Length: 225
Length: 301
Ligand SMILES: Nc1ncnc2c1ncn2[C@@H]1O[C@H](COP(=O)(O)OP(=O)(O)O)[C@@H](O)[C@H]1O
Ligand SMILES: [Mg+2]
Image (cartoon, rainbow over all chains, first blue to last red; front, side):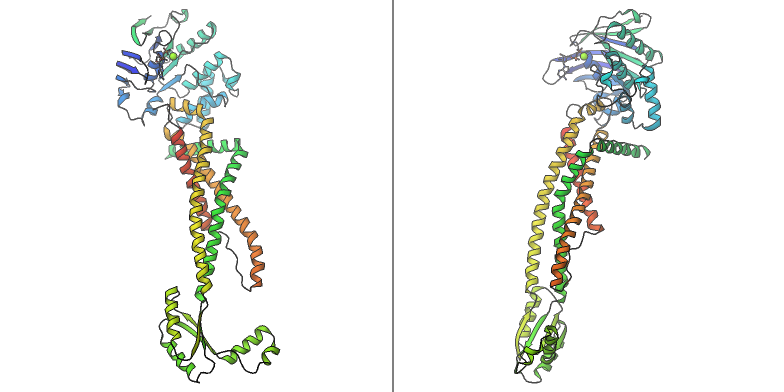
């Protein structure tokens, strides 16, 4: 459902962040994007989510060529994804409930229907009792879970998370990964960028694909079981 | 259709909740807009009342023809016949000098001075209402009449109307200039206010764009904001116009009673009130549109 063919990305006034990257991700897969800081993981995720366009090469999302899409249709492509940003991008001027409400309101879902979905999403990340709390009062792990709730509230078929365990200690990190696994179990395609060496014991029983980046080049695409 | 409605009611609700959240700020901005708009609105109201007055008086405007004192008896009859033939004359009235004297007596209620006069100092007179009221026609009619036999003087009593009309014209030009200058000021004020709002909502706008909000979704609440600023400002302007003109009319009434007329400035009616509100709504909308287009969508394609 996501295909990169010879994709190169160069930011204006910068060197190549990605060079000749090709791979395919299928429906329902669990994919880890690994590599050092600056290897191009975030860039790869942004290209997948139609936030950036490739400099050369093609990115196909559900057989749609992102480069050929009019900029007016890009927002609708983006809505297929649930995104967890590297820096959360939570809105600190409103409570948890209204943070999770944002993607729904963008999709024109409001009122009772929205309320049900928001509470279901908060429930999934075990933050139902914090619905009225402001994000600033949450712990790091809770903020990350709130970001996940916002990403899944509109029931996307693809969930993309950029270093979701980056600043968390081991217990919290394992907890978050568990959540992603649960989504993958119910058929969601899950793509996670991480800079730590994988092999975290929790995931050994889950089959997953690893895209390893080194200085913008894909050096390994392997399936771990 | 339904989703269209949802989108708009969603944006409107959002804007109204933001309004409530900083009510004092909002009121202050709307008041500033109202004061700015009140000036041209008051000018317009005064000018249109004045030109109504000018038109009104113009239709009553007359040419007075005074006959020379020592005319023959049938001069008046000859002039009457000439006036009846003249196509430029709409109607006329003959006032004999005896009648004129009686009128003067009742008007001044002072018989002594007049009865002490040896003879009637007043001439016979025709009061003519011309058909065409423009300056050129009146002037040519005046010249025609002056050529008639036995006429002492032809007086057009509309000279001050000409002057009033010139003043109104100058006033209208001034109004157009002031309105356009203030219009620019309004666009700047509303645009700036909206840019500030955009700044405080920067984080939300960024995330929204990243997760698939369309440009119009992001633009819409700000357009509503500008339109509402304009609308409420327009209402404030109307209110100020009403208040100012009512105060003026009180003094005007006293003054015009002295002159035995009843001139007062018309308060704005429904039509001109709606025009003021609509115009300021449009100004608000346009300024918002420019502000949003200039400060949004920089970081993302
Ligand atoms: N918006 C940008 N403008 C210019 N250069 C960028 C931008 N984003 C990332 N880069 C550069 O691209 C390279 C890859 O960055 P990134 O994809 O963020 O790596 P990672 O997420 O693996 O740390 C880095 O060298 C970074 O400096
Ligand atoms: Mg990164």
